[in-house]
Length: 118
Image 1 (cartoon, rainbow, N blue to C red):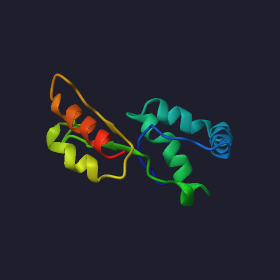
Image 2 (image 1 turned 135 degrees about the horizontal axis):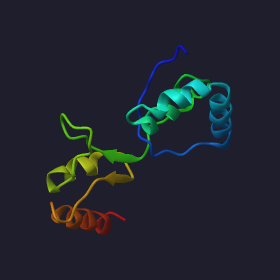
Image 3 (image 1 turned 45 degrees about the horizontal axis):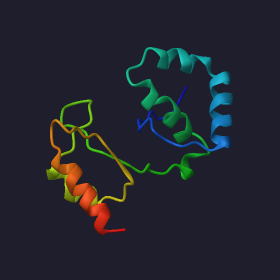
Image 4 (image 1 turned 90 degrees about the vertical axis):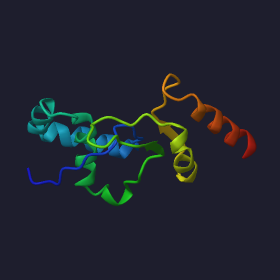
């Protein structure tokens, strides 16, 4: 199958027509299910790749989750107080990942920001 492989977050919202399209596409292309079954991070590739290579491509938009990837790692960076200004400047509604044991100050900064900017 000739298609461009794309990886995106596996946290997304799908319209009913997109779900119908995906289900029909997978039913018509069982080889993709076999391929992705043994692929690392299949959940981050299969749906975005199918939709990216379809008539849905112009309607794909970035999600509202801020996530910073740790350099040289396949894991999300734990956000700290040092990331506060970047978080504030982003157009994202949600963020990951936080850890109280790593840096509790980021929670105080975010809470103060929310209280002071209704």
